[in-house]
Length: 637
Image (tube, rainbow, N blue to C red):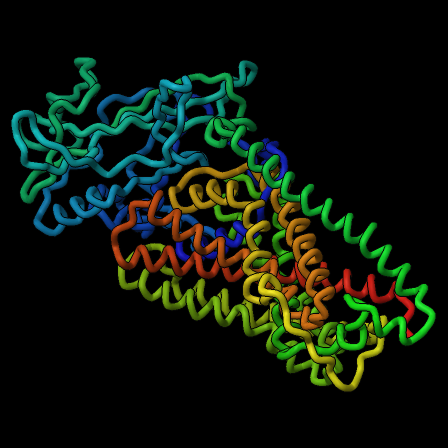
């Protein structure tokens, strides 16, 4: 689950598109037809908990293992998000109901009893898969009248016997599965369209000597049509207790077609809130657009006309405002190399997000393609390195830089190195907890290869092409001696204006941010990339417009140090993102363990850092275009 968090959270950078959550399945993810009696293999996946955020393999608990545990081939994204898909002893036959099948009998010792209790304390859920559909627990809601689906079932629960105050641990050892299928009336074949379960805790009893194949239970007997319907006599988790694991299978015909089988899982009942988010963000954009239009069409037009009509040098010297700094406005900033690196990295992230959003809207990142989002984002990040190198080298050459290889190396290394350092620390913590979320050494090697074997060379290729291009010419000449900046009003203080600039971009996305955080940290489905794309577009416009407005006010105050301030103005929205993540942690999550808290804040730090470079680069390019436009429109003597 480790790196999945960090990059899925860079989907926080993504913000959204239309609510067309129609599932489109990738080529190769074809439906599978089953005839009556065909075997259905249930696969088990990780154990997950919203309280610890640490996934574990299914067989990390002493559940009944098959004769040989076989790992399914996982893609890069699945490994990074902690998925470990393995075979199980749960085998069904298509459209043949089963009642009270015995899986195995287990006697608990002190160690296994402790392991089960710890997982029950931390509210771990068991995840299973049938025909690529995750196992869900249907929960009926009274208001509104609807059914919501909870991924996986709890390992067990805590409770007290009637008349007792002592809290006991009970395990869910009987699973009542429901497999929903859509039947083809012509061929009599069927496709699986639903996989649900109702878990029960039952203290099974039997007579005579135990024989797994021949023993008949008295608490659950298919011959007597006696099945489990409640947990009135629950199975305790204590040392030396014997637990018998059983299951039922019921098949239900459904009108839902295979292509629409994910719709119930992905149905959002609160789409009105998303529309409110969009309308709220659009109001911000309209307000800013009005201000930009006023500046561009009225104030600037008047200023430019007036400046161009000045006849004498004396008249020009009497003027004040943004024209007076024309000889310094394109003076290279402090630390120009660092600015070039951050702008290039922002371009790389922007390209990754944009293309990922296109794939998502087309349906290529459907939940049926498990791990697809993570894999696509990683690969796109690597291949977008060519644009990062190009953007940083073009800007570097404009600043009269000569060592393009040095700037290319910094662009290729700096951001990934900082993220990797945080990631390795977090991964070490996960290793220490023996969680399946820890990235294996083989996958770690693959990530390093993607970075140094593909991304770094592509950054150099992009930088070489960008540096070979003619340098960007400034519309006005730069004076040799810097002009003194007059004392600024309190509201034009750099720190104050930068912090003010980040509020509106964050305000445009924070409602949708709640749903993104909920899907990541509370293991809920999120597949409304339509809204996400719309919010992302609004974020781009908001970042650009607020930066242009504040840049104009800054230049009118005869402060020409706009390079870094334009980047930091919109980039400061990342600070509000991190503060909101902190608020979300204390108000919505129930994380109590130190390691889990460190993981949360570590991943949110990575997400906020990524959000900073994207929004900062958007603001920088908006201000860069704006200053070049206005200074190329006036006559400079």
